[in-house]
Length: 282
Image (cartoon, rainbow, N blue to C red; front, side, top):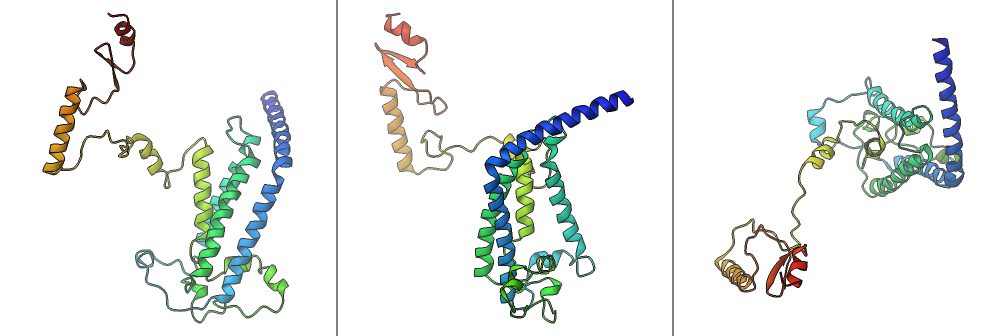
């Protein structure tokens, strides 16, 4: 037993060393993209902090979700952050699985480059959205009467630049549309769906069923049978077209769409081997 553990530990250590060498080489080539992505995360936090200064509390907007789902409230607010933290840490640890597991489809550095690029573009759209559409926050700390609903004017630029982390991130107001938590969650889920070895169920049922369903017909080809009722004029035009095909020796069967060619008075289908026989006078 001790020998087996020692042998497996040695294999694991070699795997970690080899993967570390590979990832370091990738990091040397891609560190600029990772750094830019991390800087953009700070800019996103800074923008969310800035819109909090503009937030003005007001009546809670009518929303079907609030009507159907019970509010967590201040006592259970930790549940939302705990769930998001679990999702974030799970994905973060999964991206480092090539260092340990034999079965691997990704490089850690490259997958984080892709993830950060997705996050950055989504967050830029989010910043534009919540600065152009400011709504009263429905969370308990953003309502009228709460000391956190509005922020006093900052005394210095340093106060803004440090964004009061982490309290300023957890108790932000005014950045409603659209959810930053959902940006991270959906990016993580879609990335795992593409590169993971196992599948989540979340919104990926659509992905699975879409693979099983036949493709929709292409209406631009013009070769599809008519699926809708046609007028008498359309029927007459279709009849003339079919008669024209009969005169040219083409089939009028709408199910038979193969290309045909005439050589020496003989009709050939799909350019197959009969072409040689026709050319030889067979």
